[in-house]
Length: 475
Image 1 (cartoon, rainbow, N blue to C red):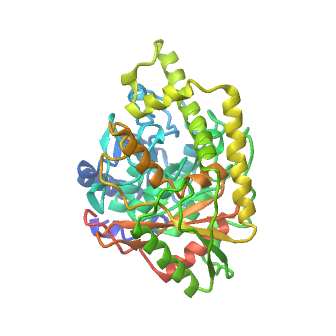
Image 2 (cartoon, rainbow, N blue to C red):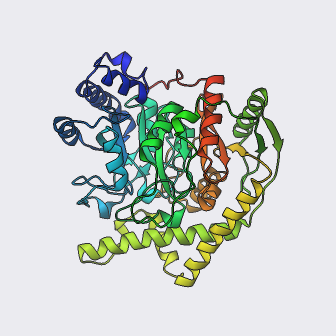
Image 3 (cartoon, helix red, strand yellow):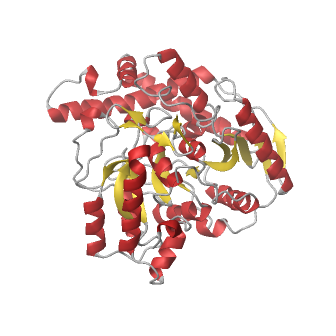
């Protein structure tokens, strides 16, 4: 396969070529590795190459799955591949090697995907840039001085640059949607309980975190979700069942939707004019497609939500770090982790089990508020982020300017984090680029379990304003 042909196909298209015998999985892997070798020194998107494992997968024979033969990356956070490091972007986990696959890894391999590496993540996914003291900075293919988003920035940079058509991602506060927005991709966060976390974990961040992917095409996202969704054995709860395969939803014309347009962040921080221009443009597009868009307001107790999410995230990070230190037979040290992570750890040590229980009640209360709001609307429309992609360094967990780090971080998650607390499905769609050539993502959120509605609208938007041909200068 010629270099120029590879990224003209999405994952579904590549799998079809493999099934028809027009290209071999070995050729696709060779092309992905060639592109990684060409692009990764600039972007730093793939931090753990897995060529040997990928070659072994091909030698063992691929299953006849819906994405058989397609190269794939796993994010280096919370998802295990037996025998390969899972570092979580943290130095104390630099040599942590799991003995078995996560259930989601197993499902990806059963779909026929060929894992050839692990993509970069900031430490424990705690910020919206992909920069770490362990692996360095991941750069945005649209502008190398800007962030690729986080925490799935390695995945997004690799897909946007054309290393592969889709890649695994995870989302605990916006970490699928924000990198998708920064890199001009599609990214959907599924409903709470939709994705498996076993066998080692029951849920992510007490249900605030989930997993899926970033992709260039809608059908890739739908096809991958069909191949991987569903509670695994022993999961604490399932998401509402889907009406039909998501792949079928994208070609179904959505009924006219009543859409609530939000132009104010949930945490009260200001929204950049570029993001307001983008969401107003998206609102007009939705109206031309027959949907009713209504400017609305939605308010929550910002401080209560912040306290709840900090307690849950901090508590989960503390447990990981404590367990790792115990496994190494020593105490935790400040230089085991990023400065901001150490600050979080010290803060959470002061909170109690009762505080954690209150935090769970707090995020569940937000979930009820959002679902009640959505009884009057089919969907919520907003910018994905409160500002365009930041310059590198500002959002890094090692930034010594803590007030700026916190303010800019909360601006970036001002529209996304609430749907992690509430558990609702949400997607970022690449519909706008600003005058500097940076992508500005548009977020849509739907009722619990209504990923099908999101895919129907996404398919309609993709047809109305195609984005697949837009490529960054580093592509």
